[in-house]
Length: 458
Ligand code: PFF
Image 1 (cartoon, helix red, strand yellow):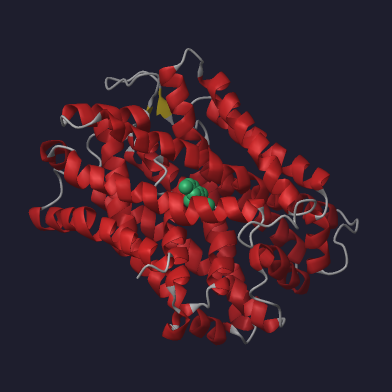
Image 2: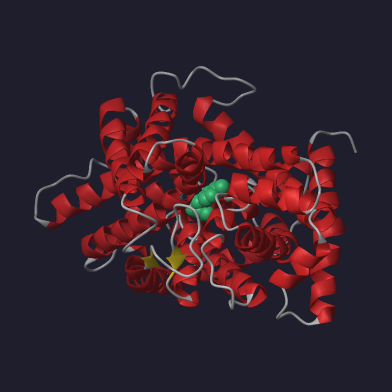
């Protein structure tokens, strides 16, 4: 999908072969475990409707403008995020320290990936279980809850499946920027979408669909507090892959004639639809089977198997579902590896494969902490959270929004207006002004306010 030699050659990188190629890659980066695994469980933990409403508000007011901003900064800089930021700061006569935003972004990518690949390993373990079920051997232990608990209790199984997942992700990045990724997104994402629709159809027939719609969309304002708002903002950043410069890294390879505003809207729409569909698929099952919705990170791994077990050809659906979820997670994991890898390629004498091996190796080492959090270390708590939960909470709810805030300030206040306007040249003046107000005022103030409210300072 990327031509390595183009007229607009950029140091050590290629270019997306078309606008569609970029949209597919960025949608692939956005749609992943965040939509299908994280959105339903965080929604349940934060009381449903009110959380979803704030989440949707964040996508529109913070997510889309920032998505545009990351793409435009990447395209204006045409390097790895760190060096793009450095160059843009230079061209705008600003301090070079702004490139630090890229350094933090690359590190946050590694931090997020260090637990993301472990959860992705659960998905692969389920693919295996259902494949074995399908050939007639019994692989599913007792109840879905017991099956999930048994998986978490085994560091060896967790490590095996998650390492396999990470190895494939590292392999793809090593081979050059996402060759073959376009095909998988173009083909497999619509399939995942279709399967989710089938699950939503199953939910509709379960008799608990309406209850789920009310649960997801009727805001109970008494449930809102600082932490719920922080979680909704964090989830919006996580889902759209914002604040860690992954989209900026992809933006560096974007063709000149691509309309950034429209593209950002398409990506956000696709991403949000998948999250909402996942919610509409999961909650009817939760209510129909009388399951615990606030069970935390195991939510989809415990609820969906109940439905699959009750469905005709359930094992086949399950196998397809978890396989497609693993593919969606792969296309996201690649974007988490990209900023740090691109930087090493540019800055050191290491080539791409060696660079991504270094980054992947560090991620793997950190991931061992997450693997152990589900068993041997489950009792070691800091602020009531185990190691994995702490990394997930800090990286998602604090570091991603903080990164987004800095990116917004940089684009809105620091980078020369000429550079920015040139990137958004195809946007009419009114829309451009709206974007500018959002990025200069709304995004930074909103994120700051949320931090202050969540810290109990307001
Ligand atoms: N957006 C992806 C998902 O929702 O699964 C993964 C992801 C990418 C999460 C980048 C966080 C992030 F910073």
